[in-house]
Image 1: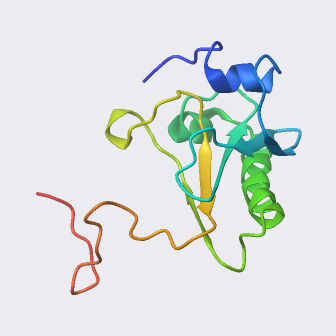
Image 2: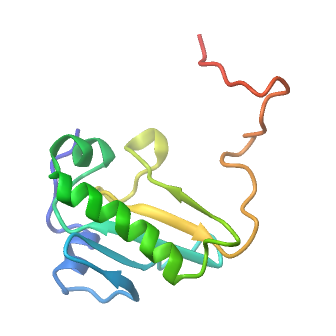
Image 3: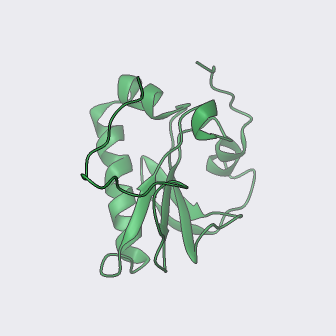
Length: 133
């Protein structure tokens, strides 16, 4: 996996070297509006620690950091008034998922119906998914 690069854009935002449109800041997390929104509301929630991905984070973060990040995701969704209408939470991991910045970030998307999760992602007729052989 990738080694953490402390010059990535999110590391610079955490350190205050680049501006962000903050939604929420806590001891362990920062939530801010995405500069290239894919929905009317598109916020990123990042841990303040140097974690490349969800795998890195869940393997190496403290329990307090993990709880702090996920509480920030929930609190940001409430602050953005997304709970009643619904929202999507997602995180990309590495090349196949098209991760662009190698600092863990959770996307919160909402503000309109979002459609299927993936292109061509209709639920199969029998309602079950199967792994490719």
